[in-house]
Image (cartoon, rainbow, N blue to C red; front, top):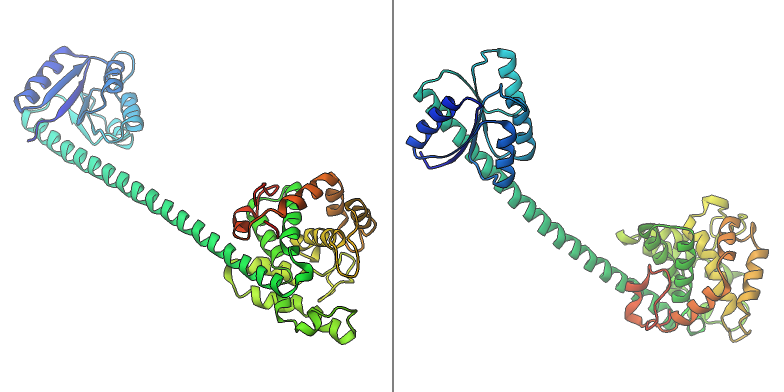
Length: 372
């Protein structure tokens, strides 16, 4: 038998001496205590015991309460109850509370040896299981960390791809260059002011950035036409919502954002396109985006007109509350100071092309970064 450390807990001195002699004869290192409280103090100072042999009836804390404490705080240490109480209910209670054996006094040397061997084997298995579980948890933690890092890298690569798609549209339509980035920044700021959580915010930001992606399929003769579009041309232009939706929804991580692409031209009163949705039938992200889109459209210069002031744009948006825009979102928009929009437009102008994926969901876009 391998040399083990054993803690004896018994209030009878002759029992402690007998057990100590028998176990030391077998080469074990023995610590003997006369109370449960003393045993717990020993365990607190040094919990590295291979076995506890405990009586039940002792002054102060009894052996079953000691068993409860050891099972809770030192579950790897096996406990054998050594008692003169020959009661099935007490023995059953001891086993239910974590004892691995129940040794009745008086017992023979052979009985003690047999119990010790079983206890030691169980203790070995418990420790082995504890080490195995710890190693498993460590492996799981490491792999979870690696998976999280991989997912973050994948998400960044998705956003870089998304950004490239938006930039491709900007290259086709110089008239609205930077619009996608600005309107995304405005949408994020407004959504944040409404308390929208990060995950939904990412979806809304991606939908806002890709809202006009369907225009890639619009013929240049229509997209770049300097004058007013005729009825047929306008009909073709309006197809960009559905074309964009069909493009984006095929990409798994953009399926929810695709709904914003599809509905970004709907109006709160139901007079928008392509499906004439109204009220809350329009996704929340699209209703938020509609205000940000209008704000940028009104305050941006075009070849045929000069952009208006942010004050005038806010007044126009207020006028369209309940018609083009959701009145609750308009209220949240008007609660934000004018400076938040003018400052944000200035900051968006500094965002580099490679930085969108790291700035999509900040409350305001930090200095040192390029236009949308």
